[in-house]
Length: 315
Image (cartoon, rainbow, N blue to C red; front, side):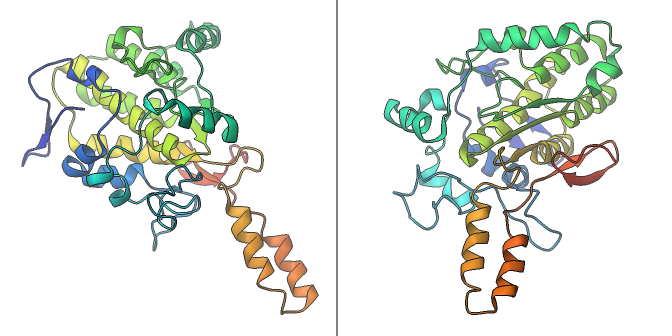
């Protein structure tokens, strides 16, 4: 994304070329950290493991970067801002831009493959037919979930997952793309636009194992909101609005081992903890084994304004 500045009135200003966002598949973490540091930090948060007293980030959950530092880039280590900016700014990039060997390795080790955009469009088209008669409010509030979302093409299609080429707004087919297109078509008040956009993001979920892919997905959702806002109003949204969008994204796109509904690798940490208890009584050890099966994932239920366990449903 091109350079932006934050002025004293808390606005972001785009550079002069109106469609320049469409030129950059690989979003610059350096740019986000420099221009929007608070938002950058939010996009890295893991909401399940964070508390009011301690903020934790999503983890790498793979060993693709361990050659840089076997501790800082270990699978169970958190993705820290300094590890992906500065001289390390280019280590995270979309799958389409990764070396072929790394793509093959990810496919082999994590079954990581990406769906062609034409398939995404057909599947989303089929689902959307059921909602053709929805009024705007009902349509925006309908909940969607992309499982094992990778870089989230079913949610937003900023670029072609195979070629890496940017896709213009009118040809994007993700389910948030569709919601934002309808908001652009039907809403002509900026405050209402922002209200509906937040609702659209609150109703859109996705989960992913790999931390690098999850960060890319979160960035894609964030910059997609900027794109549609600018297309509608020909100006940048307020920084506080973008911060709110980032917060929703950090709750709704989350890291998870789908088979166990836990934070990836957290059962290994629990097992290690259990092994350290062998010096205690067998009864005590057995009790700990029952407790430690990994960190169960939490998500935000925006309807009730509470964090719940994934799969728990509305209460």
